[in-house]
Amino acid sequence: MKTLVIKTGLHETFDTEARLPILSFGDVLRSTVILQVIAGEHEWLAPAQMQMLLAATKRVEKVDAADYQLIINLENNEEYFSLMRKTDLGFFKKDYLRLKSGEEINLVDFNKAHQGKNWSQKLFIMLGHEWKNERPKLVTPNSNPQSDFGFNWQVGLKWAHKDWGKENWKEVYRLLSKEHSVSWQEGFDNLNLYLAWIKNQKVLFTHDSLGLHIAQALNVPVVALFGPTSMTDIPRFPEDVFLNFQEECHLTPSHIDEILKEVFLRRVNGASTGRQ
Image: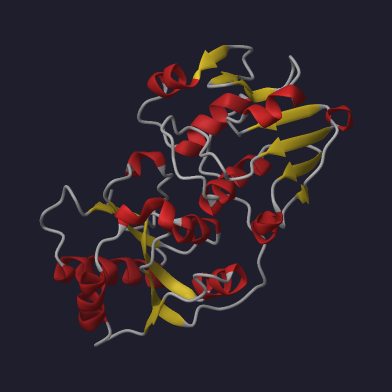
């Protein structure tokens, strides 16, 4: 069986709000979790910029629907609806999903029906599977971590309001670097360097961004900051800590310093954090 996945990153799959027309690398990467349950040969329709994130599959830019037994369309975009047949899954018309169960449902209603479930769970429901903590599928060269902590502090233009503030990051660095090696974000405009940098961290301190999804795919524990975006949407693995800097007034740099050190010790000792 040969499957085509359509996911370009121009639209975030379960997002019902209009966003800036900027490619979302994070949305493409976290979509690769479905490769864990797709049987047989698969290809992925996406622009060339996504090549490094899609090394686990074959990226294509032009397709003929007749070449595939199944199409999974994760783009809520009229450009791709003409490819969809009655047996295909995902978006088949504007704001409407077809599920493996045969149900055709409005996106708003689908989100309401599965409120509280994370993004991977909703994807798996659409495909007729149960999510069992599968991670995005990302192929990178082997390497050993070089730094205790990586500070993934920059945010892209699409979500500029996620920024916690550079002065806060500097204060955490001042506290943490007394006892640990800390590396500031590298490769903001170079995906190859960015992937290598994240893989070289024992723990990643990050905004809710592409770096978070990369770290989870690479099994790097994260301490992730959320604010304007919902942490419910992101899968949380046992080693991860999610914090909301807009709702939790106690989140001072000194408090985050303590949390980071705890996560580091847990990684060294091979245990989960026990935090939510």
